Length: 112
Ligand code: AMP
Ligand code: ZN
Image (cartoon, rainbow, N blue to C red; front, side):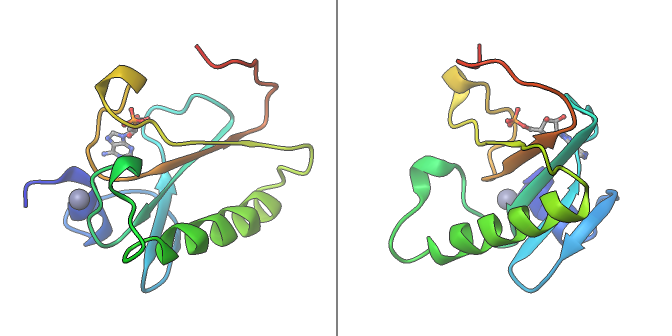
């Protein structure tokens, strides 16, 4: 499959790795929108949050456990934001499920 994040998870395209285990890969966003901006992805391809099912949802819980750990390790003690854009209308540019973990600055709400 011609998927950028599948290739990054497989090490076929270089990235700045933050964390990796059997199910999850985390790496720095190439165009950071905050002082800390990490992407967390399942290694197995899921297209978007709209494609989470009872069969594949366990990895999502795992991603959130990893995100909480990384937030501590990266010093985001004041808080952070986790975002997943789903579909073109929400600005999803890479069609492989990913969670943006961002911190190190204040955020406004609602997000644009
Ligand atoms: P989204 O727009 O929510 O689909 O998020 C995709 C994110 O992937 C954007 O924040 C991009 O900056 C980021 N991105 C695109 N290509 C790469 C890459 N090769 N390495 C790291 N991050 C990337
Ligand atoms: Zn993929």
